[in-house]
Length: 63
Image (cartoon, rainbow, N blue to C red; front, side, top):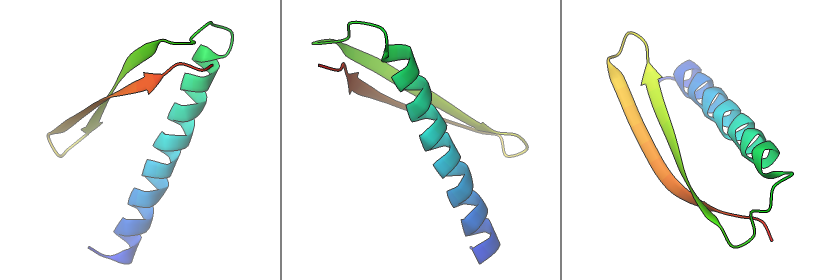
């Protein structure tokens, strides 16, 4: 894989990570999430590559 590809991939994944964290934090901000566990799922699709990739995980509430 070439450097241009690697840089574009890293930029995209950083954007996904940062914006996803901000969205989750905002959703939890004014709620009592103490002691709760949430199931999170991300579905990645790439147009033109016939790619669908799903990642699931757990997020612990704050407090």
